[in-house]
Image (tube, rainbow, N blue to C red; front, side, top):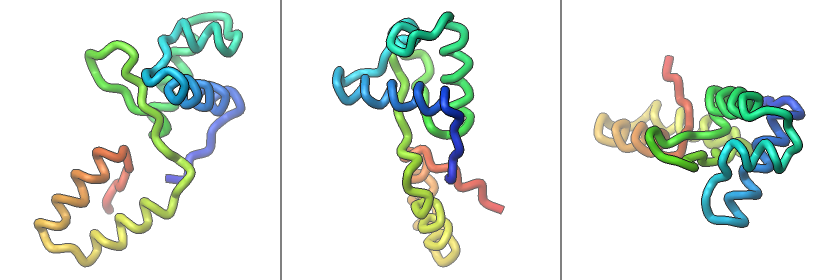
Length: 110
């Protein structure tokens, strides 16, 4: 889960994380726009979509202010999950997959 973000993506990611930490809920796109001095809500939406696709953010469908920040600073977590999956029983595999989904970890098993 080694995610490389652009400077703008990092700014959006950091702003969302700080906002959530301060307020206890995620910012609206307009909050992000105003907080970062961006010119349009559509630009914010594009950054949020890209961050979601990269796995840095998660959205809860059908819910307002549903952005969740995914911790992208620990790439060793994915390696640990894969290592455990290699020797897991079918029941343990199910638990590991569910845990990874909850944590927003992309395992892309091959």
